[in-house]
View 1 (cartoon, rainbow, N blue to C red):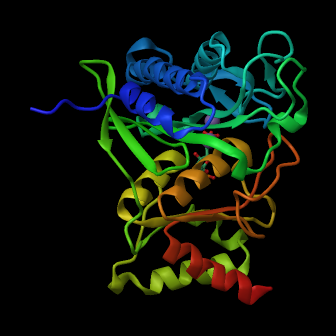
View 2 (view 1 turned 180 degrees about the vertical axis):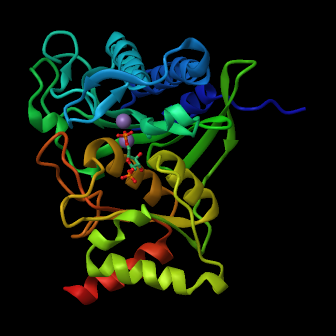
Length: 331
Ligand code: AHG
Ligand code: MN
Ligand code: MN
């Protein structure tokens, strides 16, 4: 009988793909897996532990933080700062970047993270997630980090991924040579390779957008959604969970597009370039999909601000390209 591959074994084997490896990335990915298991444990027992609900504080974006938002943020920070491979961390939950050790002088990598995505769904027991992206520092080792270490284009990512705390817990990641998914066996406490070489299906027919926003959207989004609605006989369906990780994951498996568009009162949309959009864009492109904003490729965009938001359209190539046609017709 063959033995199932664990996440740890898989990343060790993958280490050979990287030129000049020092094992720091392997260590960092392992740490993410450990933090994910701790957060997963807390998410699973949220109702029991009496930790559901409002933490009574707000984050930098003026959004109410849930207790689990705080727990997830603290857990990832604690574990990532304790490892030797991370120089700095940008978190959706914290205004300023965290510099590890002495001003981030040591450590090769920068991590950007949405510790808990979809947290408004916690109270109703709906799937939530964690999204992360990893890039190399730009300043030489031994020098303090600067904002340029954090504000790098998505094409500079070394790895990105997400953890989905769902009916089962999954960790999906890429280092730029395909996308692989691992499912947590809670009895053993290990992530096992369950979805090797993940790819979007050839043709996607799911569209995912908050329908209540439609009247505030620009013409291309309205026309695209209208076209999807007119094609229900051809199999088009709408699905929207309201947790980006969950909506993205479903669309990756069943084929679809996720849209969080530019709105009249929020021209930049809602989602954050560094913590949400670019890491999932890396996964999407590695899985044969596409990710764009209103001006072009998400991955090629150089951020100007840590907490920057961008309109976001991600998923199956056929659907993102169909949307793009409406965008181009408008220009
Ligand atoms: P977060 O919980 O990290 O703030 O992210 C919430 C995001 C995303 O997960 C989701 O897709 C989107 O907000 C839903 O927004 P609407 O409620 O406006 O549809
Ligand atoms: Mn989020
Ligand atoms: Mn979040």
